[in-house]
Length: 477
Image (tube, rainbow, N blue to C red):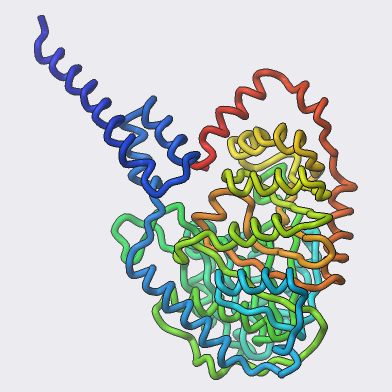
């Protein structure tokens, strides 16, 4: 008998069961049942690989220093808001009761109050928002602040890069924040030449085992913000990258162009992230330009991210969904909700709210797409109008409620965006803005296939199996 071999086999088997039992106690702590289920299922079948993966990405770990910086950044945002040189007319706003409740919740979550006097444009497609951003960059005279998840070293990235270099050449102070994961090539290839032109560049959430101030490698800054001269802001879903950066899947985007007092809130988010990454401010908040009343839109910026200790955008969206009375329209490229979010959507449809959910028919992430499809039967059974956008990959992320409120930003309706990514959205309390968003939604729906329950029920068994397996891993995606 080969005793050493037998002893090693027994030891290995015992270690696997020790891992299973120990993680059965540890994993469910401070976790939703669905997240605990997904991890325990993985660990039960693959104890050692599951344990290693859990050690890497199982907990949303943010170093204490970054949590302290987030608290300071929130204090900075409140300080910026208190010192904002805004006209009295912009601050003296009146909202209906339901909107007041939303504005209070958003202010509690993200520190910014609703503010009036803004002008807003919604730019969709791909070339239109890009062309407008470039036009305004060419007209900048004082400052340019860019914050992006993806800034690529391709033809689009080079167009914007040349604008920045020309701006720096005419004396404009340019500052750029790029996510270390999404923009690694630009940080490696473009950043050196930017610095030669006097442009300040910093990477966000640096990746590396032995680097200071590093958290989990999959915690990313997914925000997209442009602030020009402190008076024009852009934000939404679009990165600085070719529309077909994933071959065969060209993007369709939605971007907000904003002028007025709320631009200073986007400036505050940029300054908070600059401080978050560098520990210092590029200038004093007293240098923020005085804003003027330029329109009638009331706006409110909502940042979110793991540093807040809560899921800001998810909490707000759930509140908006439960508050909807007649009509609710949502669009997202990735719909992998947790249980509270899904129950809110289903409850809205069941109580008679006309609910349109616009999703891409095809996706650039296969497993995530299978997980997304696993929810279609529940959505259709509850009465959700499910529209699958064709031709391009719909990357827009928005929500409109009745004829009153629009929410547009960088946040996908999935667990990753809600819990792991730093995101930013803007609330628009304006019937005209909601009407414009309804026109864009109608265009999307006109280019979509509306899915029927009978057609979906006829899908092949193999497809159902793939969707159900992917759904089990929803908390890992």
